[in-house]
Image (cartoon, rainbow, N blue to C red; front, side, top):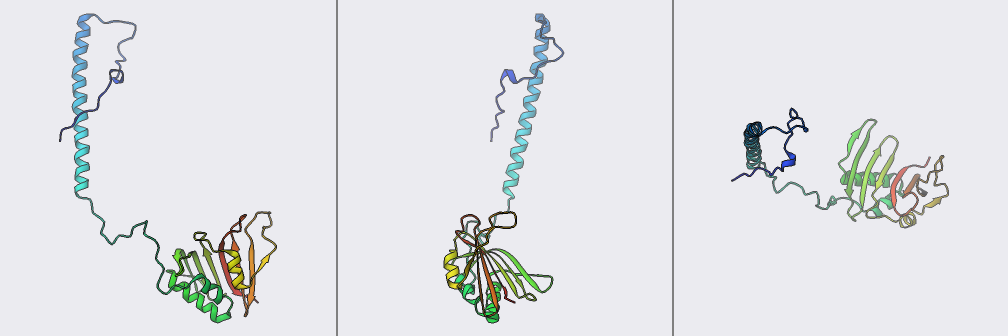
Length: 219
């Protein structure tokens, strides 16, 4: 492969600081300095060619030894597939109103959906995204066995309608949707059935989608 050094304009060449700009050298001196300048220029060109050639050679060497990814490497663009035993979001809503048995079903369903990790105090947690069998995405899951509390994060894409979820739960809109500082935290829907309390949170300001769900004992 033939290498060509980059073109350098005359204005880009370094000035000789030892020669005042106000003085013009005589012809003999100018010829001597010109010869020295030509020699320096040739040396710079040779160094540039060497460095350029070395860089290209190292790049080619690295490319020849590059480890190719196997075909089993997951593609970032590949859609997240649900676990075969994942429940639907509607399953979770119905189970939430079925007391202890429903709580156990939700815990089992989340265990089938997430790779839950143990935490202190007999608790489990995992971050998402994790896809349910109906295509909806969960952003996290937390299960506390001693407190019998389950917290689930819900992705806004695809959106879960709060009115649809509240209709299945028979939940009522909580009139308070701002915190103590007056910040809109999203509307909240609450429901109680068979000794369990269920709360769903929604998108702040727009209230368009369900963002979280909490299930724990009502007493």
